[in-house]
Image (tube, rainbow, N blue to C red):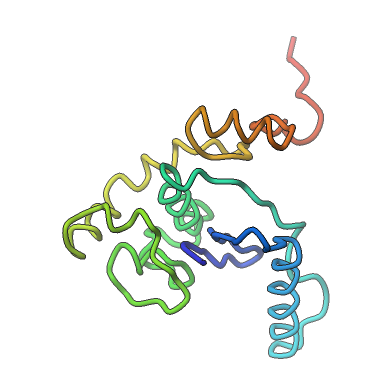
Length: 173
């Protein structure tokens, strides 16, 4: 199921729920290849289309799914493509924030809990958008409460926070 997305000029953000039989790497390869062939044929493009390999992150569905979706949808603003996420047509933001129907999106399971009716849910979704985004640690592998993170670290044998890329900075004298 696809809950949230943002198609950026050089990469894609997807918030997906997979079934146990899903092999995420194979799924992403199929999406990337089919889009790459379409794009190259349509625009006579030569060369690499995407930068780098896909990254995945486990999300505790109960608490952080909508927050992660908002993070995905704020990316066009953070990248200075638009000033307001509603102005970016290649994301799921307007589906949740303004009720625009989007056949690609399966409603986030937590969306219904945001209000008694559609207008309340839309207004609630728009509230505090930027504040929630600041709460996400960009180096995290798992998003959830402490119990969920500890369980995932143990199950996968990795620390939640990835180390910073590159060499450590040299301290100035």
